[in-house]
Length: 89
Image 1 (cartoon, helix red, strand yellow):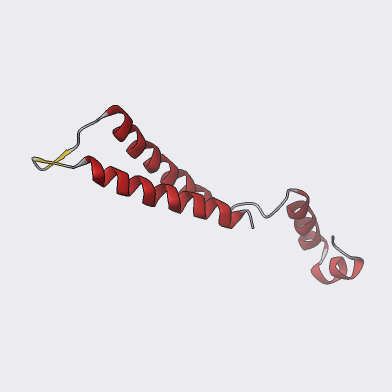
Image 2 (cartoon, helix red, strand yellow):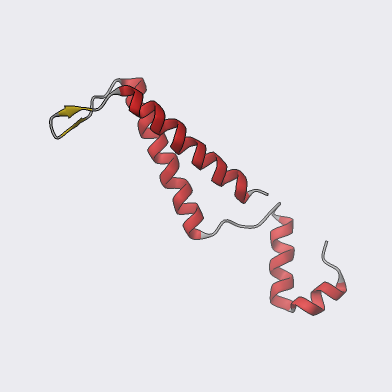
């Protein structure tokens, strides 16, 4: 909770911002953090769909193995979850 002394030191705008953030259960995510989170989640979803639907990927005539999508899914989903949980602290 914000005390009277804190409100005077921070000024009206900063005090209102701090009150709004604390009433929402944390601070709001910054735009680039949100964009990064969405991109990581979408990449993880596409890799999961590739695994579930059996899509084949060919790069310059060479087939990309399915296990590479497993690694990419774990990495991108892990980063997305980590970034999301970091913003909720």
